[in-house]
Image (cartoon, rainbow, N blue to C red; front, top):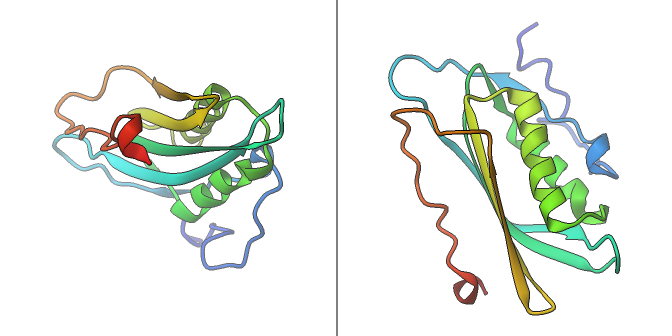
Length: 153
């Protein structure tokens, strides 16, 4: 059975997990080859979670960049994982870092960074940045492309 045949979500009707802890991040094999590492980007401009105190929705624009080693995160499983936060109450910082750590645990990349640009609550936007360490040598790292707050709206 090939690694792709082991996927349980891609090509199937799958309900959104009730919570991030219930979501399964699936992976597929990746052959790096020679030369500088590839950088893979996922952008989620409409990420939603809940404030853990008020229960009100919080919104963010997430940019996830990673340099895969032997595994890629399968994008449908990532979409379902991110969507599972819609009913999850956690602070911006916790959500952002939890997402990064789950991707790292699933794929064991050479490197990963996440930028969470959270829309303001109480007039203050919160931006959260996290990475696993120094980027790989020779990798091309584009800017996140998210403008400062006034340009986000």
